[in-house]
Length: 317
Image 1 (tube, rainbow, N blue to C red):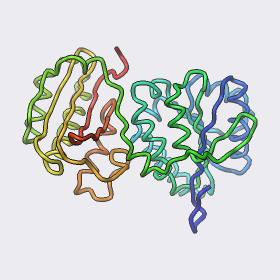
Image 2: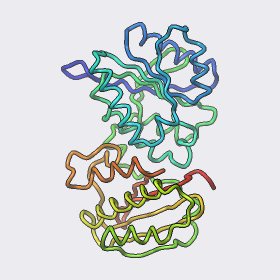
Image 3: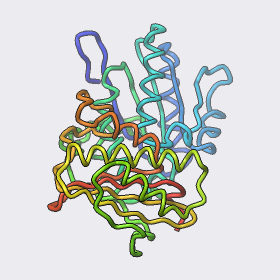
Image 4: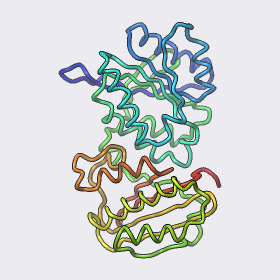
């Protein structure tokens, strides 16, 4: 575990399983060791996996079970909520914390690009806390490219036989997050956009999205999207390079907005997942956007920098 002069640090491990027996053999000893050490111990797995683990623990085990669909709704929200939870544990005197978590299956498909960024960023975001975490992946249905990213974002790996090893292919967050990581294209993006315009203000961008809306989204969700469009367009106008191009696609289930400028984008590798230290460069707005939209994708290429925002059902075809 990486530690500083105060004994704090973060041990971030991946654990792989291919059966219920594998899962229990790696999770249960990890949790019991934490309880024996008097550490706050948290489980955030899919409902069926949580019940399996709960039934394998002693009735008196003081493990906190959190619904993983809530915890892992969005990467930036997960980081914020975990940091708040761990800060509370530390304030109450905890000298160690254990968390066993598993992303929802939907996170491993259309939205893996931002969850890959999450798995890398937490190596920095949680390093203020005395945390040992286990990120579980079912090798039976986890895509190969996801497992490849898991190996590159976890310094350690735990095995079903209780072994622990250093991962030779681990890539530190600044290098991993700097890599191009295109989002999976959505079917709606293969159709001509409803809007394709150059905007000069955030008000123009917001109005264009409102005029193109065809989705049956709750009013609050659409307002969150409009706020996000305002934030991203403001960043592009103030900190990017013209022209700022806005494209919008919409159907009954979702609205997709892309804001593109010809600049290089934010220099901070953690942009969106953590509030930037220098808020004058738009880092706080991009962090807010990551908590409001169903999905946010960042793209850099030879043409410049783009942010894609999705509101509504990301996974419906």
